[in-house]
Structure formats: C-alpha cells, structure tokens
Image 1: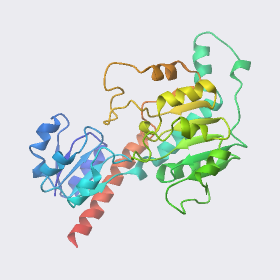
Image 2: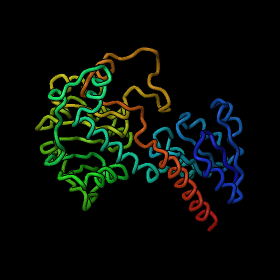
Image 3: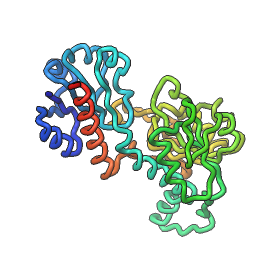
Image 4: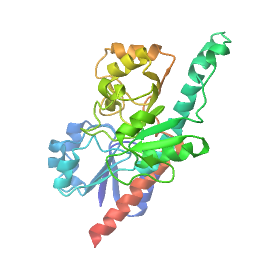
Amino acid sequence: MKILHLDTNHSLLINQLNDLSYSNDEDYTSSKQEIEKKIHLYDGFIIRSRFSIDRNFIDKATNLKFIGRVGAGLENIDCEYAQSKGIALIAAPEGNRNAVGEHSLAMLLSLFNKLNKADNEVRNGKWLREENRGIELDGRTIGLIGYGNMGKSFAKKLRGFDVEVLCYDIKAKMGDVNCKQVSLTELQEKADVLSLHTPQTELTKNMINSDFISGFKKPFWLINTARGKSVVTKDLVLALKSKKILGAGLDVLEYEKSSFENLFSDDKMPNAFKYLIDSDNVLLSPHVAGWSLESKERLAQTIVDKIKNLINILKK
C-alpha cells in the first residue's frame, strides 16, 4: 500500500501507517499539476485543504483506492465521481466534533456577555460597566440546523444550562436525549439562538438569506461554525442593522477560498465584511472551531483507524 501525504498533519498519522508497513511519501510543496503527474503511483492519498480534487485529478489517479481528508467535510472533492470510480472517501468528523462544540459554546457566551467588546475597551482605558451588562443563557431556546457529529457535540455541551435545545435535520429520527428534533417552522418560531452545523451542499449554499431570516418569529443570535457559504453576508448585515439578528459568532465566512487557507480570492475587502469587522456584536475567528491541539491528534487517529478498516475490508 503506497500513500501520498499532501498536507502536514499530526506525526502519528505517518508513524502509525509506517508501523503497518505501508509506504508513505510526503509532498507538501509541489503544484497540483506536478502531483497529477505522479498520482497514478499511489493507492491512496491524504489531504487537508490544499487544493480541490476534481475529475481531471481523479482520472489521473488510476490506481487509487481511497482519498483521506483530515477534516470533517468532503466538499473539496468531487465525491460522486470518485465513488463512481470505486474510490473510498474517508473523512474524520469524529476527530474534531468536541472542539467545534466547545468553540460554538465559547462564541455564544462571549457574545451574550460582550466579552470581546469589553476586553477591547479596557485595553483602551475605558471602564464601562453598565454598557457591558450581559444577558444569561438560561431560559433560552437554542435551535440547531444539522444534527450530525457537530450538532450533537454542541447539544451535549449545553446540558449544563437550563435551556431548551431544538434541532432541524433533513434526516428523520435524529433527535436524542440532548435535543428535540422539530420542523423548521417550529424551530424558527421558538429559537432565540440559531447555530449551524451543516455540511456544504447545494441545499445549504446561501441557506441563511433574507427570506430565511425573516421567517424567525423573534430576533435571534447566529452562530456559524459550519461553512461560510451557508450565509449570505450582505443579508446578514441587513439583519444586524435591523436588529432581526442581535449578534453573530462567525468562525467561517462566505469569502473563504475553497482551500480554507486564505480569506479572499482577490485583494478587495467586501463592504459587508467591513461592517462585520466594525461591529461590537460580531465575533470572528479564522475557521478554527475544529482546530484544537487535541483535535489535531484525534483527526489523524481517526484517519488511521478508518484506513485500517478499509484495508481489512479490501482484503476479504
């Protein structure tokens, strides 16, 4: 089994695959075109978000048995085409779900307690107590869209609070002891907070737009640790200005490149993003919700375990 590693990851990934007598090559600098010239030599490759895996790339990978992505989603891979070629797809949402749950909670509590605003003011010599009076989470209704690994992790973190947790998911019977599954209409009627935990698909692109936002009965807070393209930023800004959305915690942005490594595709900063930067009720982080020291190790271990399982299946 010959494996090509295209992004740096936790050292246990290569070490454990070496222990299994697999051949591991590393190439973290060559262009996509250069990789295409040699990808036919490999049974599998492991990538994070360096470049997209399209049909042309897959066609050149004539011996490929699997693609491993050290992350939760697979949207940078043409999954349908890869699977039509008999290529197994391996992701690792189990590896960073805990980190995402904690980050979502941290963003929510920071917004409710104005911690980012207060910290900046104190650093600039302002001691404003009444202006930084926060609100409490207890008694509120938290609505989740998407109840897979990430949504379940966030709901579990909320167990210590006196809150009602509701979820909407396109799959039936997803609710559990931590969360009641409801219709989208009921979620929009009851939610004080909306937290997104969906993959990037055609269904979720531009999902949070003006029409969707206006469907909520009450003003609400928005948390997005999922995918940036789920939220139409200009519509979010309009809702912030009208106070239909009371504040937003955004770990991801519409403007991210598909590689997730850089923010903008060009040097122009959109006006809507300028508004977010200047807003006291907006908290931003650079797509790091699942990016903890612990998740780095868990992600790698999850990929190793799934490769081992796949190879065992192929041997049968």
